[in-house]
Image (cartoon, rainbow, N blue to C red; front, side, top):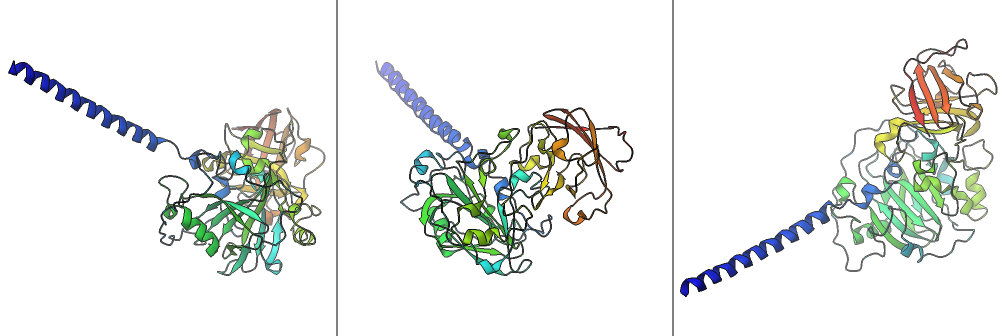
Length: 441
């Protein structure tokens, strides 16, 4: 009888141990699954390009400067309305957040983002500058130059209108300047804006960063993986930080959900490009006219465009395979045929790699007839065309990379292009492919 009781007691203990082990295993499994869930910034379609440094100096970036030591403040008990789990992308608000915003009026900005007398020039939307901006469609913002480029001088930056800060992305040591932050904001349900290459944050913006902490688990300001997602209202004129320093210019752009551009293949492009608009259109007069008057352009008061695709012709953006301009690793697979954003009468060929040994940009005056240096919109399938550069073009200072040679190309269909670079000029009328590369829309 005693042995039976002992066996029964042992069985109960064994069952209890197994139950505990199963429970612990379940907890560890759920924890592992939680840790392996991809962060939202890793699947956002816009986070790569919007962080690309742009400088009007050189495309080469000097050695990185070690970022200053940062200490993350603990998250406050009251969390921001913004939720990383609800947003499709860093700057794409959830429907709940959009519902908090007012309807859009005609005038949304009343204050210049920087003092008018500090502006040295404004580059229009649609700048092509390989490799980071091979496609003009990537450059969905204007670039405002300020005094003191190439020095440590900074210019104060303020909120141009009443708005809601929706994203602050602190960044350190990624350009020739120690700091290089991004701030994005909403004016209303449909119109949003961005300032990029902010060289220091104002006390007001730094307080927002310190009070919230990173939007994603494991993020760190020290390694530039700490986007701050929020919905913080501020008034026009509120200090945002400073711009300038060595880079000497900053992105200033808007996107409007009521505007959708037409591309040969819209799935290739990011959210901001699809809805890019001219930021000066939302300013009150006479400030609007003053800012437009500072555009470095022969376009006649226009901010430029990202919309240059002409289906069935050579003009516009081309890609190798499934390449995307929003993926850094794909920059070498991009190719652009389109106008110069400063002068629409000039043509640009911009290519990052694959068919050339270095990022290359040619600017030239196109021709209206023949098969040499023909206007891109006139190039149609099944004819071989040739574009050359002898290195002595009067527009050569606007180019970069390989300064001479030729591209021979042929549209094999409305959506497929065969192209090859050769180290010679477009002499004669017979050009033979040796090892062409195929691009598609």
